Length: 89
Image (spheres, helix red, strand yellow):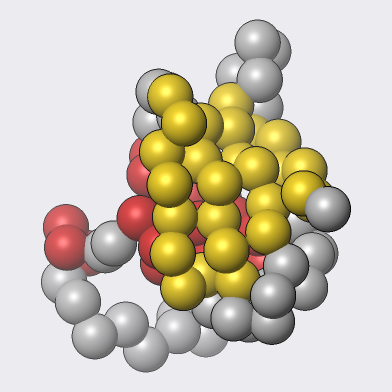
């Protein structure tokens, strides 16, 4: 499962399951960038980031995200299919 599919599924669960108002997004749903997907995934994991300002793909479903607050995270899909976010020092 791709990071984009996982991120969109997580956002859907959060906005539907908890009744949270949808965030204003400038792009059409099909045009959401990888940086916005990673921003959502990191936020859903409860980690400080703000917005992802750049991302480097390390492999399939494996990214290093750099945040506007200076934090860096590795976001990837584990062997069990779960999205994992690890802080990089």
